[in-house]
Amino acid sequence: MQYSEGRLGRIFTLRLEDGERLPDVLEDFAREQGLKGALVFYLGGAQHGSRVVVGPEAGRKKVVPLIHVLQGIQEVLAVGTIFPNAEGQPVMHLHAASGREGGATVGCTRAGVEVWLVGEVVILEILDTSGQRRKDPETGFELLQFT
Image 1: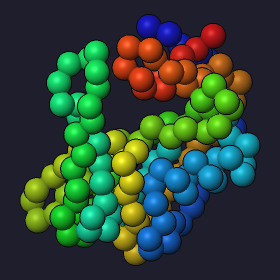
Image 2 (image 1 turned 135 degrees about the vertical axis):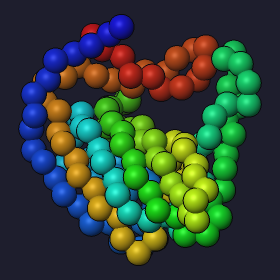
Image 3 (image 1 turned 90 degrees about the vertical axis):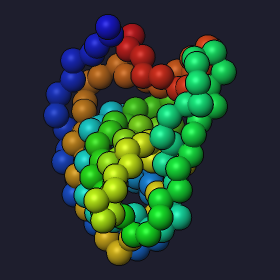
Image 4 (image 1 turned 120 degrees about the vertical axis):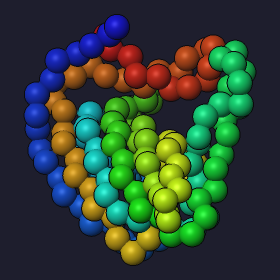
């Protein structure tokens, strides 16, 4: 286990608009606000055709993501983090549970989730943390690391 202690900074509440895309819109916001670490909550909808990563095909050596395309408008609840990569750019890791008519999907929003009508977001800034996403040579993922 690795860890870093931080403290609570600013708290942002956002209303995302119809068609805005996760994770892009929140990474752009983090860049504009100079966020170096944050906890993110999302509550809202996803448009038909949004895409989530629902797991790797198999194994850990060569990770091939499985992409699931959402059918119909979906209700969404998500939680994630924002930390900078090696170049200092904010990268969000946001997992979402979405559903429609009793069916549910859980996955990472990295593949692109488009907001349907409205998305409400709360961002809690984490100050004084050493978290940084660094590329893992085995998986190719930018994994959270602490110094």
